[in-house]
Length: 499
Image 1: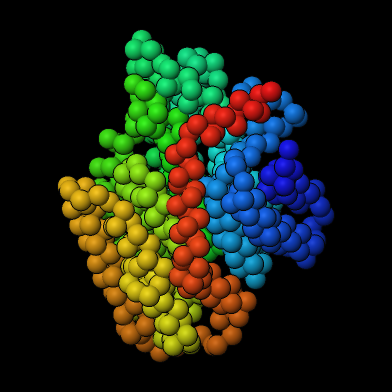
Image 2: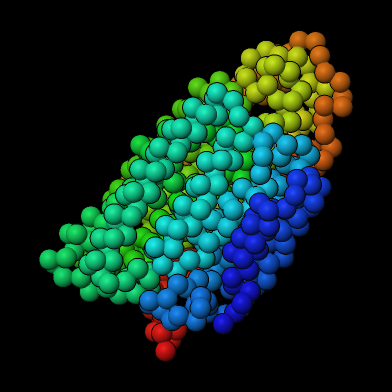
């Protein structure tokens, strides 16, 4: 077995546990957390190279073989998601150690457990352990959302916790139903059992599959289950909100994985179970998210609604069901995750220079560094809206080209272009308020922390990097989507691993 495969789970697991028992030595804890997080970067590149060079790999924990043992699965899609997480987490932790981690206790331990849950969700090969890793990342996120305290965070956190607890209960019901009907929760084995389902068991399997879709849609912030997200993301601390940019992608990843491999084209009577639901709800999510951005009263709320727009966009393209469309969606996923994370960090830099006005979109004091911060704001806005020459433009162009001619093309083109126009107006309103409708400055230049600025700049610069490596990256995402649709390959790996 390839032991590199388990390191993205072991590294944050042991680091988080060690941070819980270490004495209260700030520099030591910060150094350990930063080192463990940055180590995920070269590790993710190693796994990315391994996934690109060979077939799907499995890791059987305790050498208990599938379909009964706990297995981890590394393919191109999982490796790409690990890289997206590592880059985002590295920026978030470097930003946090500039002082944000002092707002509450055990920030770095919670941060590592969050990474443990996210990485585990991307690597697991069975539904029960997907549930386990979901719970780990959610429990850590509950505490991270409340990090720093405050009435607004408590209110948003209460809604977030209650909704996700309900989602967890439904997840268990769905998993129990599937296990009772098929005798397995291994995704590759489950795809075989679902494809062979009789007319008698198909309705119950469909009910369990739709319950899973409900749970994943809650994580992915799909209409009508997205209302928790804008408030939660808007009040979270800057490094926490930046890290949360990957949270909706965990739900989207689960939908892509389960409803391509288990309930996809080869699922017999249950083929393409989610498609009829995903397409209209995803388009509606994009529309309402764009309207929410227009109505936002704070910069953080505007960015939170744009996370809803990006999640809806991803799910709409994924719902097309073709490898070409899903390859374009994976390119957009990287773009939207890193740029959204960078913009949450930039919003915090701006808020620190506006005194008690913070991120409110009302007239405030003049910024001490309007040219620098204004340039970064303009860069981020262009990237998010999807104007050339940044990665947002290439991502949207790929997605629009991937939709076949017909009614679906009309709907997707209209919604995405309309949402882009709304985003442009929302950023124009925010930019004019923050940089032009200003009074006298009340802060000195020391308010702009160079460390925070450098991290923000690097994360936003990922948009340029995605343009520079567009050709090899698109080739990789196309191969990842094609591999995901090759269900026979996953079933063959399962059979080989069971020997």
